[in-house]
Image (cartoon, rainbow, N blue to C red; front, side, top):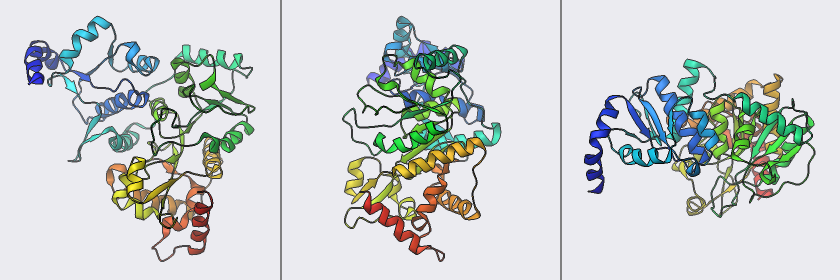
Length: 405
């Protein structure tokens, strides 16, 4: 009743705005991942012609925004209203159905319907890549490039150094989630980056686990200079991102930064673009400690499980990727960027096989690549049930799962 009354009272203002093509986006301002991905989906959908070409407006006071600096970048594509009095005035109008747009969802063409941003992003990104290539939506501004150089100099590093940004989601906020991982498993990969001359900049909340002192590693999460501005500075100019499927991944997506994402969960999801690499956590049965095949997961409702309670109810536990698997994935990204990466015909076939399983649910057909060495090591989990299944190798892969639990 209150909603109807509000709609009637605000109609005299909402109606002319609607006629002018204005739509207020319902972006979740308090979460940096949503602040990055929801505007991106809105913009890409418009460029593809998958929605009417409305003028998008975001109402946001700086103090209620997860990262105001990121939102200033979106002001290049959208209207951002931040004056407190005007935000307060327009919020009632913005809830009117005539002008409100739920940016947590996106319309897909061809009768596919309306879906939340993940998985809608997979189809949107694939279509955008085919039509427009890989140009990013956002590019670092010159002032942010200058900030990066100054910060590197303060740390005693060469201001012309290349770096990667590291962010691994952990249970620092008390919330259990299948997306949490242990950053210590990433340290072998971190050493591989510094061995090639790169710097590793770890970002995150000060409550996160401290990194041990390592040459070429800046733990910005525990630095006096840590800020929302510097998070965007580091992420937007990284050679690539290394971490987990958390908010900073979406920031890198908006800036066109390649992403390396081990420990992806759920397995039915993946990274977004053809520049990215990911490998999933393995699903292991509690009753006997055996890993499920990829087909058992991706051809069943198990692919949609999300929270730890759902996995436990299904009699499953998730097994994180090993330090060696994460190292291999990072090495693959560096080789790809250096132009030295190679695959065999068998590697290509395994990649196609995994993507075919992902596409059993067409909404989740990602353009991203699965790590070459991960698919080699777990070939039996990929091929099991086929006439050419490499059974002996599969036994070794399953043994590895049991040993690292």
